[in-house]
Length: 238
Length: 311
Image (cartoon, rainbow over all chains, first blue to last red; front, side, top):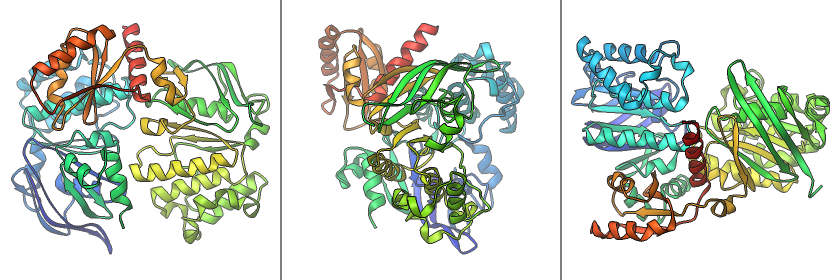
């Protein structure tokens, strides 16, 4: 789904991504962890076709990031904590706006919209402004909108910040369901228990990949009982 | 003074137009305690802190810091508290040392006199003391903001989500610093959405939608929870078993918890049939065991009860 070879991204003399190489397999939940400033957002922007790499070979959903960015954008979904839905539009307007942006057919949109509202239990608030609905519902709706057009890959940038522990888990249940439908998930998070839900985890330290493996293998390798310990031990390695 | 109450919050109510932000919030923080205010966005943590530090007036109820009423004696309150608000409180166009100097001066304190208190934190950014605050990394801004909150040697330190959005390593380091500050006899109130940090507090208040659901010592969460709690563990994935477990008679709730499922039963009598059912699935890597209730388990139980009663 994603193939990255020797990705380098420089901002002036600052090397944000230092020869990253990794692959993401279809249907996988791929965790991308690291401190703020380690280079995660830079990488995601490149993979989404929002920014050019300085060098390296990168393919997303079978398309080259240098020459086929528009094709990539049609096949991906994106959701972040900072931006997901338009606050001054209603629930329904947001769904239809994003569906339109991703090029879905009008009749199809209407049907999928009512399916989605029913699935999330949001029919009663479909005409409410986003800014007025609780954060937990916003998050779940934002995710649903990001996968509305059945993308091959969905990028989630710290999607569960700020919600209560029940909502966070319901959100991850939605992610698991999406994976069952064949969607590949690329997620960053600061919650280490969420790292456990990933099939494989990639840990960035200062622009470089420090570890890339299944959580179970990483725990064994670092003699840790959970991913939190792995992360801490790894970051303290100098 | 030991045994005294640093902060007394009595029946506080606060609304903003239609939003009822705080509902009858009532609890105490003991002198020298590291007290955690735990809850998601919208719980009312920031609003409560703003009332405690005298930036907001409650609609009803009272709050006292070291015996001083935060409304009538706000000037004195402002001298005994140190406040690190959610968004950074720094002047971006002043340097690191200018920021520190500013805060010390505003409180009539001196950097030199109180340097020992902030040394642990400040020494990491001291090499950058001439750099403009706006050009510091997130972690360094955080350290500077903390130094500025401490420079006048407050008796009560109030930190509003200092670690939100920060990686696990930096968070742990920050809490190590907090423990050191606590050893200086300073009472600390800190809010956080992270349950692992909640476990590090002496006592916690669990908040959601303006209400305090519980106030307790972390280690005593198990005693406060009547429903027995179990974990289903697997060397492989646990998600496939979630729906199966939820369908079992006697299962009150089941949730993902990292590499295990946490299962609450209706009553202890429901355990043997469920254990038998799990064994009948014939998955050798599955482990079923009773576990201690963590803060997060307790919090989820309380949230669920709240949601059920409001339906």
